[in-house]
Amino acid sequence: MAHVELSLSEVFAPAASTEQESDNFGQWSGMVSRAAEPCLLIDAGTTVVAISSSGCDLLCLGAPEDVIGLPLLEGGLRLVDFTASPSELTEQETDKIPPLLALHSGRLARGLLRVQQPGSDAGRTVDAISTPVLSDGAVAGSLTFLSAV
View 1 (cartoon, rainbow, N blue to C red):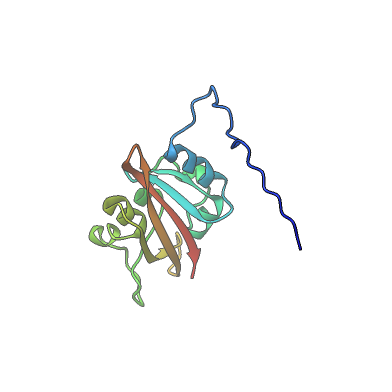
View 2 (view 1 turned 120 degrees about the horizontal axis):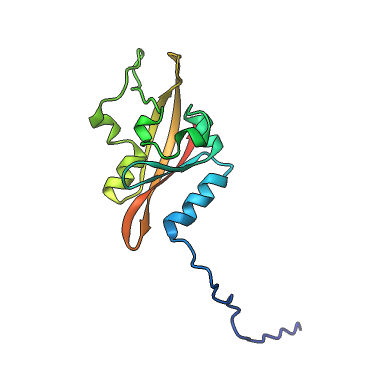
């Protein structure tokens, strides 16, 4: 017969740091910037706060430093429809893309995007899953994970 002993001890809790930790939004910003996966973080004003290098590659945006600080739809992102002869999305249609929908609804959003490379007629289809990011109980932005389809 096997014998198992169990002993309980105090829970290890790290000592409180003297440095004030950043809020939830700030922590996500750092993680997205360093992520290997294609992802994007925008704030409540739709400004790109952080984007991974692979996210820039997938969305045809160049380097992260070229996009950070610019509004999502004015930083070179060209979204087109899924027709045979793609045309740019209207403002009504862009309001429904997952990063903006999660931001405005405060709920999880998922959808397909068709991204057009600069100087090309070819489009790339991207699956986007977005979630709102909260700070002090309010929606402060949205976090989007991307993948090529």
